[in-house]
Each structure stands twice: as structure tokens, then as C-alpha cells.
Length: 136
Image 1: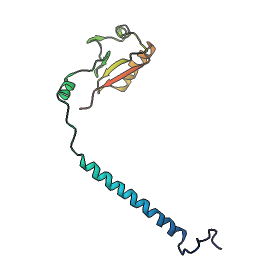
Image 2: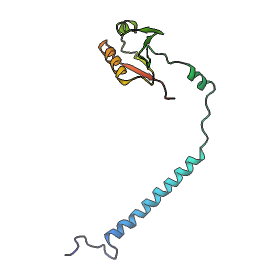
Image 3: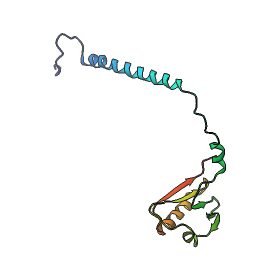
Image 4: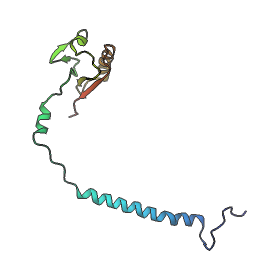
């Protein structure tokens, strides 16, 4: 059976040879770009300096949260412990412009967080920001 694709006039190369020849410049270009970015990345290996006083203040400062959820199950609003029954009455009223900020300990169990979020949703809080502690 004869080939359906006629060879180009004056060329003795097969279709695979022509495809390989056309891919070679593309491979060279990708290699050159790779080399460029490797060299450019090596030029700026000095880390950015830390801002004075920011790192020390961030460790000691607690986030400004409306509700604090501790890992042992205690809830605090404004530094005072609250129970499940008085939680909604102690929090600021739901507002469309200001989200409720919740600070959660990193050891907090997801089931506890989910129950608090469901309770807040039932109370009318639609926008909530969750503040978490970084892992040590």
C-alpha cells in the first residue's frame, strides 16, 4: 500500500525526520530560558531584611478578635468567658459591613469549630473571619 502523504518535492526526508528537525529549535529555546532563570535566580539570593520591631511585637500581640475559641473548649468574648447560652448576647450584633472575627487555637478540634459556626449562622452572622495561630 502506498503512503497517503506525498513527500515534499526535492526532499528525501520522512515526516518523522521533518518533525524532529522542527522541534530542535523549540528545545534549544526552552533550554536557554531555563538557563536564564537559573542564573537570574542566583543573582538575588540575599533575603529581604526584617522590619525593625515587627517580629518581636507580632509574637506578643494577640489578634483583635470578637470571639476567642480555646483548645480546651472555653469561649471568651472581650476577655471574659461565656457559655453557649450567653454567647450570642455577648457578641456584637450582626453587621453587613464588619465581619465577626474569631480567633481559634491551632489545637481546636474541627467539630467544635463547626458547632460554633453553625450557632453563629443561626444567630444571623453571615460574614466571619477566622484567625488562627501559626503552628510552632
